[in-house]
Length: 57
Image (tube, rainbow, N blue to C red; front, side):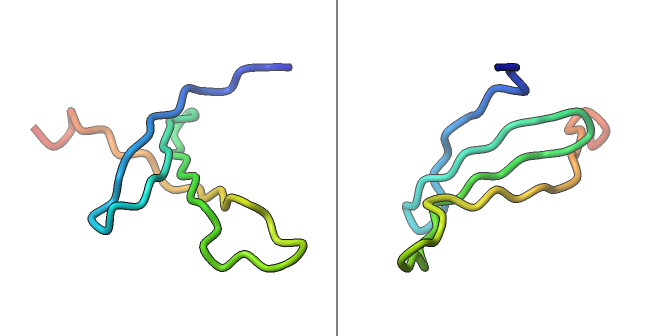
């Protein structure tokens, strides 16, 4: 097994938990699958562009 990145638990404005992490130039988001049906995954993994907060200063 290879460790890819660490994840941080966050809570959105509606009180739902999700997890985020950085992998290279990408930002990972893991959300619970709120529309779960039989055979559906428990979580959804989304990939976004990483924003470097230091560039905004």
